[in-house]
Figure 1 (cartoon, rainbow, N blue to C red):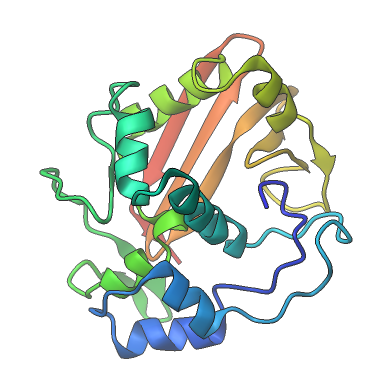
Figure 2 (figure 1 turned 90 degrees about the horizontal axis):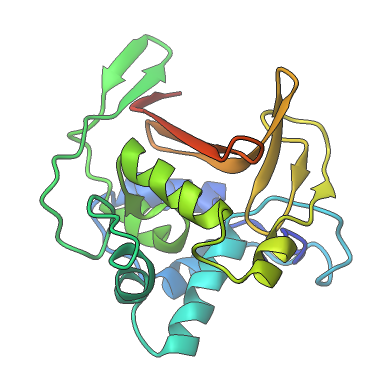
Length: 221
């Protein structure tokens, strides 16, 4: 699942998109969303070299909940966010004090503030995938802790950073276990990017200088 070699079908399908537009305020359970929108597997696990698919993260979230016998937001809070002092990072199921910046989307007729459109359906159906709110400072701190060995054992970190070459496409050329290897201007970075409904984020760690940077933008097509 983490290496994107599960062969699972797609999760963010046209059926999912239509459901999000039809009832934007609906609260979804992740298992319910998977049962409703995910397509059939494309291969047996391990038969595919690489196919990025958010269903992998959705199922990983359910596995963590089953393993720990608790909700994902409580597990992340107790095991990671609080110990690492990530004070401005929250999962959708939590109440959080921060003001969420408005999101802007590029449409055929221009760029529009779409923050007034309810997003409960998107955020709850994708909770393990894209259901976290954070700041660039927290995201950079998370990446620094992760890649400098303060989160995983050295054996697990080594496994995470065992990369598979993937078909060309920005911004990364190789994928490990939930992490990208991104070349740029003669340097190589580890990290990840992501987009959802008018938001974009990327976190990059330089393994040579042990520097981590994060960027968040509240506009996307």
